[in-house]
Image (cartoon, rainbow, N blue to C red; front, side):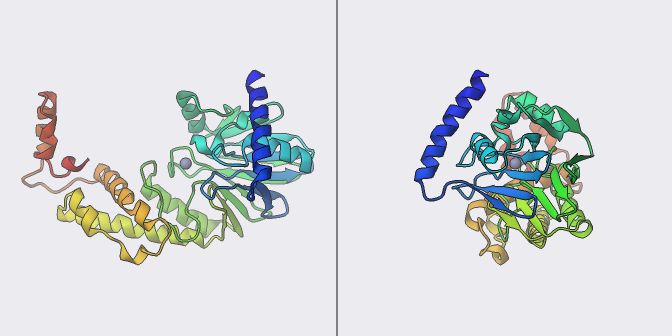
Amino acid sequence: MMRLFAKLALGLAASAVATAGAQAAQLVQASPSVWWVKGDRPGAAISSVIVTRDGLIVMDATCRSEGTAVWLKGELKKRFNLPVRYVIESHDHEDHICDLDVFDDTAVTIAHDKNREAIVREGRNTSVPDITFSKEATIWLGGKQVKLLYFGPTHSDNLIQAYLPDEKVLIAPDFMQRGKGLIPDFRDMDVDNMLETWNTVYRMYDIDVIINGHGGVSPKSDILNNIEYVTALRKAVLDEMVKGTPLPKILETVTMPEFKDWRGYSMWLKADIVTMWDYLYRKREPNVGPMHGAWQNVVDKIMNGAAEATNTANPNAAEE
Ligand SMILES: [Zn+2]
């Protein structure tokens, strides 16, 4: 109770600041029943709201911008005066779900099984899910159908999407980049399953609007941009690894000039190469050669306290 009160007080202060600014958070309608929160900072995580005659469903919240969960609660009360019956958490990353416990008084929280595990393990500042699922779930509320989809590990091991077939809307935080933009590193991504999932969603789902996790909405065709970039980067890095090029050299040779006009090129390309390399390194066995079997040598030297051995024994291990 104290915690909620503190959040409400903070929210009032934040609202006052937002009102004074030029770009206060606002609810934007994406389809007859679906709204999303446009915050004051383009990179802030987006909340979505599904409005039905019997109540509301909220997916995600931000805590790094205007449009926080506390603000949203007040705004929904003013605008719709309906209880929030369900909260959906897209995945466990805290910037997408922070403070969602402000809806615990009326809402049941739903997420993937592995989301709950991560939230509890990390002590996330959010609502701990009441209901979890492993593959697929459907919410029926006020005559609306909301399908919760899980395609296996993609961006994190617990990312889900909410799909409204009647309105052809996919709410898909951190599923892809909007327009033409580089992904901010692949550290937390199962690259191959992500590619497969993009292809599946593109081919199998009837979608007019995708609500992204950041920046705004997309047409379905934006999925193709993501497939194009990740496929090209995967190939470029893998080709170099097969040639035996060490990572520092790959960072020089893989420049992906065909993407130089895409958003985030100068900021993210090197991080993308490193994390793509790391992903592929775990999947790939080089041919037998002078370096084959060198890993045990590295381990032995590390165990003997010679950590610098990683720089000499294995060209692949050396670049981590
Ligand atoms: Zn995320």
